[in-house]
Length: 212
Figure 1 (tube, rainbow, N blue to C red):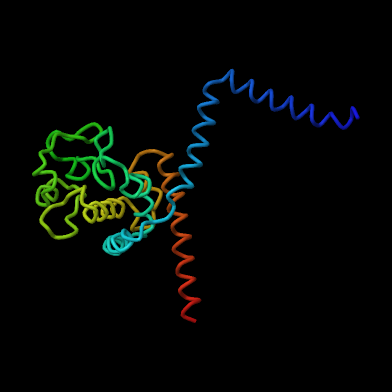
Figure 2 (cartoon, one colour):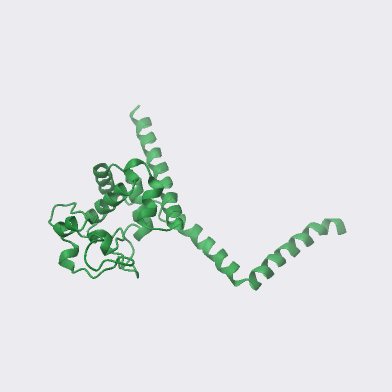
């Protein structure tokens, strides 16, 4: 009987040790909680809203990058535009979270630091101003305005930026890191990029089977 109880005793001791270590180490609690939340976050909202796919595909074709990369960025940046408002505490704006100086151009007067700048709204969305200062903002729908809060303009602008950052040459990780200088950000975008690539491949295989 004593022998049979030994595994139970060892398990109980181990669990007690883990709990005690965690209680004595608040950082471990925080890390464990973050890991759980990260897992939950990664496994929610993995379905791409259909209304955005034609925009991703058009922008991807224009700038020669995978459309699933745009979907991955959109998912990470604003959870497919469900974030409200579409404005970060740091000052990133719109559906794809552009810093104003990146959108308009870093040579615009006063652009420094994180890139929030002090840019009048009429300049921020003016394609001529954006061209003058080397920004990445794009007037995708031809209405004369390059607006980070317009879904087409935002996605085409992101495609423009990712393309020129290396994605058009196949340097996906480099392009993602340019978008946000964080290894964690790169890891998160790559997770969804691979997830969406797998979904795309599965859909294409299904269509092939159905047409045979």
